[in-house]
Length: 124
Image (tube, rainbow, N blue to C red; front, side, top):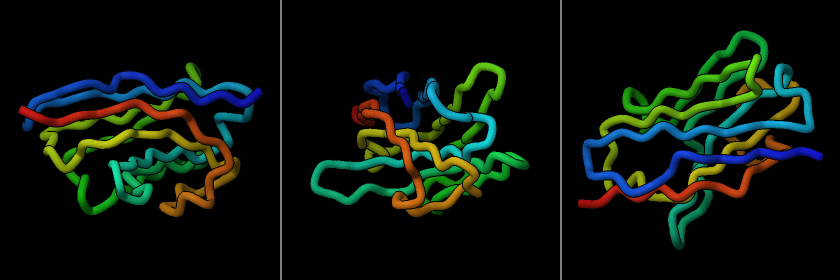
């Protein structure tokens, strides 16, 4: 059974940091690209970051480039999203997703498996 379980969300002040984690199981994590997406109320799901399986090549949305960092730990089947210099517009539910044999695409339709998400709220 495929599972993606996110954690680490919460309430943080503007300028603060959070580290999201995603625990993966039930599929070949080491040969899957992993992505983070977010969805704010009333908005479409938005690409945040992705990491490819072969060379761990990373891709970021322009809105988070330089502030967010995606990484993975193959041994632990974990993917992380370090978020720094958070802004109110980063407020959303953050989902991790898996794309077996993928390259780290920014399109949600490329990803086969999704987690339920974790809420991130940036507010003073």
